[in-house]
Image (cartoon, rainbow, N blue to C red):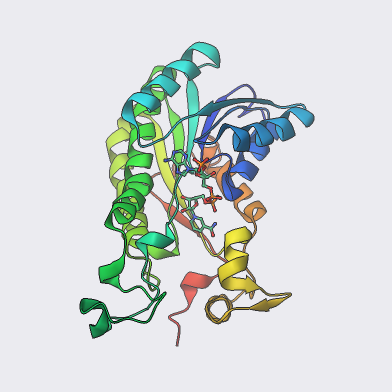
Length: 282
Ligand SMILES: NC(=O)c1ccc[n+]([C@@H]2O[C@H](COP(=O)([O-])OP(=O)(O)OC[C@H]3O[C@@H](n4cnc5c(N)ncnc54)[C@H](OP(=O)(O)O)[C@@H]3O)[C@@H](O)[C@H]2O)c1
């Protein structure tokens, strides 16, 4: 328990996912009433059950965070059934393999349809998937922030955490839509922080490094059981020599959501990356 969070309403989007399920559980342990948001009710229920077993309080609400009407309805539900939102964690986001080429640089054969079977160049990617990655990572943060800031104004202040990435600083290969949308997040975090400062609403971002989950095991491998070529490259650029765990983010998230501990911090993007950004790669 922590007096700064007891009975405070914390809304977490992407709460069924790897990172934000752990943040949701952590905030519930500190005494917050946590509203778990995502599109798939079953994923949210699984997290709500874990929180209930720990004696915490969680609500689930299935909703697409890029849908303005849907998010407005979510905000009404929260205000009427849970209470005014003090903290928002904008964790919903991600990438889509269909929005990515399989090759790291231009091959003239992609213009003539002569790439080998199973190889995809930039010109072969699914542009709807590309747009949807941009939308979820950008508007999926803008829309909930605007909705829940209205409730924070009524409370006299609040705190928002957005999710940036190592791609926010310098793009990884093949991740065009993801990287540009995560670069937008650091910029949005600054501009919304400035805009909402008079309302005492602090807006910051966490930039996780390479965190372990089922997807990352497939394309990066593991330090213990063997790395892929890309995994080796990541680890060789990570001074701490390991991938991150969701638990590595909890201290940073708690600090940024705590109005006393981080009272004068706004517009910041905090890397939690084992030092990945400290090296230039040479
Ligand atoms: N894991 C990493 O290594 C890493 C590194 C840097 C940054 N990040 C960022 O950190 C955030 C959390 O990552 P994660 O690894 O926890 O991802 P994750 O496991 O894929 O979880 C993301 C969650 O977002 C939800 N979601 C996706 N689109 C949504 C939408 N339109 N509306 C509502 N919910 C939606 C998904 O649930 P549904 O499909 O059920 O909606 C999913 O549970 C993301 O923004 C990610 O880009 C992750």
